[in-house]
Structures are given as structure tokens and as C-alpha cells.
Length: 486
Image 1 (spheres, rainbow, N blue to C red):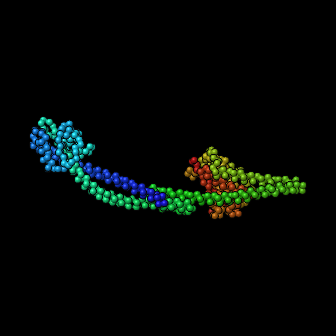
Image 2: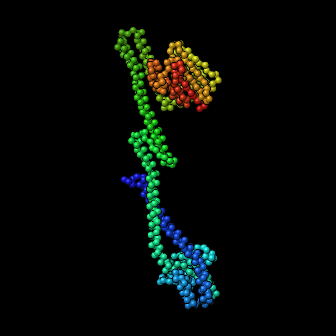
Image 3: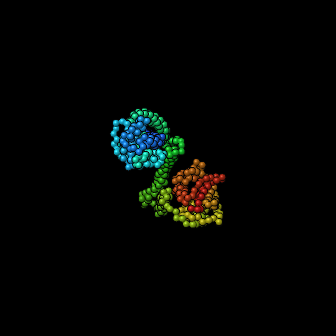
């Protein structure tokens, strides 16, 4: 189970990388130290072959006999028994040699180019040469030419002979194993401790984020994570909190929508039941008392039934229109028109309603208002619903005041009546479907209860806003703000 956690997996991966990289670093360090040792040894002994060549020239002179050379080389080997001395002709063939130990010489010829390169650089350039006693090994050397019997002979000195290598290998193996492994283990242990601690700090934030996600999954939608910093993990925590806020708001909206749906179904059921009950009652009366009713009564029952059917049809149509507006299935057909003339037309169209209650309409449009680019049919319907609502809730001999102004790049339309106003608790809900405020502003049997809701959707469809408030005198004020620039 522990290896399923992100911390355990990343820790194992880190351990593997530390071991691999540590081992590689150890090998590289050993090789680098060996190369450095070769370069230093060759630089320190760069004149060794020149000294031997001078001594050899003075001892043997022009006599290149085997006895003289062996005697001279033996003398040089006594001075430094760790080296191996070879005499090589200009083609690289070994003419003579003297080596310690019992290992045989496996090569009778070496590459001469490294010797020339060494001599031309005066021993300052690091070069490795062939080891005659091994098939492929290359070692640091010192080389110098000497003239014998008119022929150029090279004194080729392997600075670390076989006996030296054997002794060094024994010492190095023990030293490298002890010091190298000790250093490697200490460095690995320290790196692991520090790395695992840092990983714990980093993964701890991921763990808190994971716990937050599980808490959210279990239904604790108010749970939030606290992750400090400015890196990707902190940004992920911030994104989670923002997502949680959005989801929680969405859940609240869904709950509100579900509650509104339940209320809508209840309201629709009530509003549909009333006309259907009335229609059924009058039709049943006509059937049961067909012979007892006069022609006048029959006609009256039929007219009442038709009015109920018309009201029922209006309610259904407005419900369908509202659903289309809310789903944005209706696209506004924008055309430029005069908003003042449109308000004037709506007021004149509803004059019979205002005259029946002797309502005074104060309407003085600004003649300098610009044209508005919008759907004239939808705007007219919204204005009809709002102004009709104002007439409906204005008492006898009351007043409805309509103002239309331009403020910066917006068009402001205000409709104010002299009714009893809207209770403060109901102000946020007056544009909801079928919302019932107090009895002074509930809809009459003529209304569907959807007028203000449709008006809000039309205004928002045009990118505007609509608000409800109360005036200082107590009447209701509906304010519409529409952008002139779309």
C-alpha cells in the first residue's frame, strides 16, 4: 500500500537516481583523478628521457653494441627501478629494452607519432604512448632522440612500469574502496535525507490538496485548501478553491432553480386549473340545462367560456415565449428605430386602460435622443408589459410618469406610478415568474403573472439591465438601461 502513494514512488525514483548518478560520479572522479595523475607525472618527468639520452650518448658514444647499451640501461635502471626504458628506431621498432619483473614484452613495435609529438611540445602537451608489455594499454612516458652510428634512435621511457602498476593497483584498490565508498555512502545518505525531507514538504501540499478533493467528493462543498507559495502547486490550490467556489455557487443555483421549478409547476397548475375548471363548469351547465336555459344565458355562458379559453391560450403562449427567451432561442432582429416614438405608440395603444381609471400619463420625450438599434417587436412587448403593469397598480385618478434620457452611451427609461409601491422584501423577486408580492400588487385575473419576467429577458437579451425600486412618494419605479453601442 505504501508504494501506491506519490511520495513513496517519487522517493524510490529519487533513491534510484541518486545511486546511479552517485556511482557514475564516482567512476568519473576515479578516471579524472587517474588522468590528472598521468598528466602531472608526465609533466614532472618530461626531461627524464633527455637526461637518459645524454647519459647514454656519453657512455656508449657511437658504439651501438648490445653489451654497451645493456650496461648503460642497467645503470639507469638502478637509479629508478620503477621505469621501463626502450630504444626505438625512427619507424617505431623496439631495438633494445630493459624492464623489471618477469612479464614479457608483447610488442616489438610501437607508434612513433606520440613520441614526436611529445618531443615537439617539449613535454608540455599531455600524450599517452603504447605500453610494449600490454596489448592495448597506453601510459604516460618521456621520450628524446639520440644519434647513434648516424641513425636517429629514440629513448622511450615508460614512467610507470609493471612493478609500479602492481604496487599502485594494490594500494589504489584498498584506498579507493575505503575512501570512495565512504564518501559515496556519506554523500548518498545526506542527499537522501535532505531530498526526502524536501519531497515531504512538496508532497505534503499535494496531500492537502488531495484531501481537499476527497472532502469535496464526499459532499463537504465548503471545504477549501490553504497552500502557500507562488509555484504550480500553489496555483493548483488556488484553481481548486476557485473551482470549488464555482461548483458551490452552481449547486446553490441548481437548488434555487429546483425550488423555482417546483414553485413554477405549482403556479402553472393553479393558473391552468382555474380557467379549465371554469370552462368545464360552464360547458357542463350548457349540457345539463340545455333545455332550461334561455338563448341569452347560453350566449353568455359561451362568451365566458371563450374568454377563459383566450386567457388560457395567452398564458400558454407567454409561457412558451418566456421559455424561448430564457433558453436564448430567440435572436433579436436589430434595426434602428426611435425609442421615443415607440414609447408614444405603446402609451397610445394602452390609452383605453389608462382612461378607464382616469390615469394621467406624464410623458415628455427628449427630441434629441438618438436612434436605438434593437428588435422593435421585443422592445415593444417589454414596454407594453411594464407600462400595463404600472396602469394596473395605479389607483383611480393616479399618475404614471415616463422619462427617457441618454446618459453617456446608455439609454435610460423610467416608469413611475403612484401606487402603494413594492415591499422591500419583494423587490429582488418582482421579475420572477409567477412571483406574488402583497395583495396590493398581485396580478389581476387579466394578467398572466409573466409580464415582468418576459420584460427582464427581453432587456437582458439586448445587453441591458432592469431594476425595480420605490420612489420617495411610495410608488413603484421600473428603470431600464440599454446600451446604445452594441
